Image 1 (spheres, protein in one colour):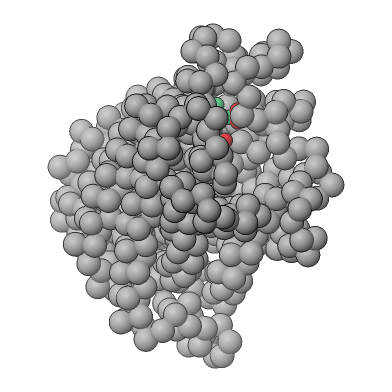
Image 2 (cartoon, rainbow, N blue to C red; image 1 turned 30 degrees about the vertical axis):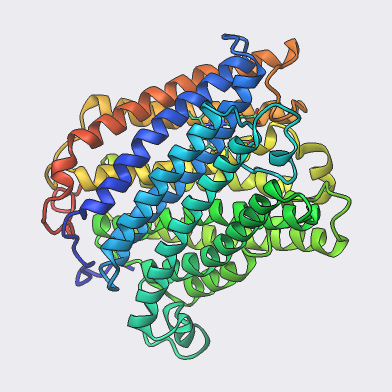
Length: 495
Ligand code: HEM
């Protein structure tokens, strides 16, 4: 597979917009990690902030983490995609401005208006607060989410525009001529294929999300405008599930683009790769009912569809990515540094997190497991040790001082702290789930507390390690703008 003639397109330093995304993501991520730790410490009975604070922090943590996953994933996608298509820097900035405005609205609704209806704003909870929060607080929360969603919609529309301008249509940017016909070796690069998929699924998800938010805002002030609760639930889950899934599909572009620069081996868009991305483009839109398997009111055909598609959709991209990474790294002489380590371990986190999701996606298991800590256990595994690890890997890659510079002992310790801390934290959640500990409970029974305590200690390790990564990234911001070809990064000192 190795081809010494292969030269990936060099980078030209990160654009200001990309760095602004990463700085915003880093700051919000740290804050949300602190909120997550506080929630876990509350369950562990290390602190006693009370249920209202717990649910306020849970609402902020859920919305904030999903938001920064979207922002940092978009930064990675935009950074690499702009090598192939002509993207608008103005739209990139507009999305960030709307994001910050939306986050401010969401924070104000929770911290000043005491809204704690959860990031899933499930209808009719926001409007039926029974005096716990005001109509204005609910409107501010849903309005903030809408503003954030509109910003992302603009960004994805611009990405779709640029891809169509360069490739003519989505069929060509997904590589269908090579997939269904003769593979002439000229399929679009993985970054373009992945971005096409993300643009398609996110335009759908964001339009659906914005529609239900608008309907709920109207309903808030004009209750006569009735909404079918089942329809609302379906729309919210389609939006939420597709959006959070797409963050990994954006972040994985870092793996496709950076690992080849380290190994000097191409990441080819071959037929198997193209088939996996095309299959997932369609399946990911129909997989969300696997969150509703306990919902007897949903049509049975939708639940069966959720289970079957859940089985098939999970694997194609993960398998081609994990297999691809192993083949390009195997005997490549790669010189491991923080960026390549974090990107490689992210594939472990992603793969490991998918397994409990797969188990939970089976209807009979789901009846027992779904409302337990098993679910936060699985998504924290692939978001924290998968998606977020990809983002940290990208940050180290951008800020690497010299092609062959060594990582400090502190960085390496933080890598192990983050990996072991994330594993310990997520296993504590999964184990609680196995013991039927319910999710979203502020107060835990004494027999559940030992898992919470172990989880809280590991979460502290994650937070401390993330702090090292982020301080290092911020300290190297100047370097991230530098214009030097990273095509041969770390290769010259390969062992
Ligand atoms: C130090 C790292 C983290 C800690 C300590 C933490 C902690 C927690 C805790 C304690 C919960 C509530 C579990 C329950 O009782 O149901 C939770 C929920 C959640 N977390 Fe995290 N988390 C961390 C990182 C992340 C990351 C990186 C993401 C996503 C990128 C994330 C997304 C979520 C979401 C979406 C929820 C669900 C909120 C809800 O149920 O409404 N978390 N987290």
